[in-house]
Image (cartoon, rainbow, N blue to C red; front, side, top):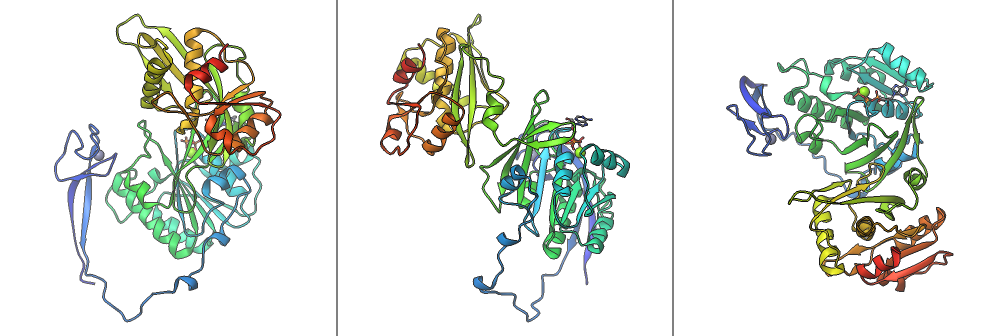
Length: 452
Ligand SMILES: Nc1ncnc2c1ncn2[C@@H]1O[C@H](COP(=O)(O)OP(=O)(O)OP(=O)(O)O)[C@@H](O)[C@H]1O
Ligand SMILES: [Mg+2]
Ligand SMILES: [Zn+2]
C-alpha cells in the first residue's frame, strides 16, 4: 500500500496526553509534575483515502435509531445511569478507585443480560473470576470468560463468539502486539481503546471498558480516552461506607445527571431504591450543626443531611473545609451569612460535610448549608423534622428552585413535618400536603424560623 513507517521516541504526559520531543518536568498543558513518560511512536505516512465511487450518504429517515435496541440489565440503578441500558456499538468506560467494586458491578451486569457476554480479564485468573462468581451467586448460560491481555487475540475471540456485550477488565492490562510499548503506557491504552471502538461499531457490540483511577481522580491514561469513548461512568464510594454511587460523567446516549446507588455486601452489590432512608439512617437527632435538605439527583429527589461544625480559630487564619460541596460556594455563603444575617464567622473554623459521602453541586442545598452553619455557631438545633430548600443569593435573598413538588413529596414520604422553601416557589405550588410548608424570602427569615 506504499506505507512508510518509522519509529521515534516521544515523551507523553500520562495525565493529559500532551506530547513532547524532549522530557519535561512540568506539563505545559495540564501543569502536572513528573508525568512525562518515554514512548515509542510509530508514524505511518498513509495516502489519503481514494474515492471509490460509492457514496455512503443516507436520508436521516432511513437511518435506524439506536434507542429500541438497548440492552438492559434489569439492574435499574445501572440502566438508568447508562440512559436506559447499553447501546449496541457503544463504548463505555467504567472508572473507579482500586477495590471499589468495578469487577463486581461488571460481572453482575453481565450475568443479567439475556444474550452472550464475554468477560475478558487481564487482572485475574479464570479461577479467581469463578470464585467471585460463586460468591455473587452468578448463574448464567451466556456468561463467557476469557483470561487474555493480547488485544488481537481478544478481537479474534469476539469475532468468533459474537457476544452482544464485551467487558474489558481492565484497559491498563491490555496491549497490542504490533506496538512496541508495554501495557499500561498511554500509547497502548489509547490504541487499544481505539481498536475496541472500531470493533464495537463494526460488530455492533457494546463494550464496557474498566479503567483504574489515579490518585488525582482521573482515569489512568490520557484524558483523551475520555474523549474517545461514548460514555464515561464513575464508581465512587468511601472505604468505610458500604454504599457506592455510580455517576455518568459523559454520555452521548443519555443524561449525565442520573446517579445509581448501590450497597456492597458479601454477595455483591444490591440496589438502593430508597436512598433518602439510607442517607438519613445514621443521623443523630437534635444535634446542632445538622440540617436536612432535599436535593434532586437526575430525576430523583434525595434527602440528605448537611453537617457543619463551627469552632473558634486559635490562629489568625481560620480553616474552611468542605466535603461533598464546592469550597468556593462555601466561602460565598459564609460571606453572605456574615454580611446579610450578621453572623460572626470570620474568626471561626468552618467544616462542612454532606453526610454519607455524596457530592452535591445544585444550589438548592444552599439554605440547608447556611442553616447548619448558623445552628453550629449558635449551638441551637434546627427544629426536628424540618427540611430546608432554597438557593441563597448574594443579597441574602432566598431564590426559587426547580422540582419543588418532587422535593416536598419526598420529605413527606419520609415523615418530615415542616418544610421551608423559597417564597417564590409558593405561588406555583399545586400540592396538597399534610406538612407545614413555609415560604421565606430571606436567609435571615429562614434561620429565625428553623433555629429556635
Ligand atoms: N468476601 C467478601 N465479602 C464481602 N465483601 C467482599 C468480599 N470480597 C470482596 N468484597 C468487596 O468487594 C470489593 C472488591 O470488589 P471488586 O474486585 O469488584 O473491585 P474492583 O474495583 O474491581 O477492584 P480492583 O481495582 O482491584 O480491580 C472489596 O473492596 C470488598 O468491598
Ligand atoms: Mg477488578
Ligand atoms: Zn499534561
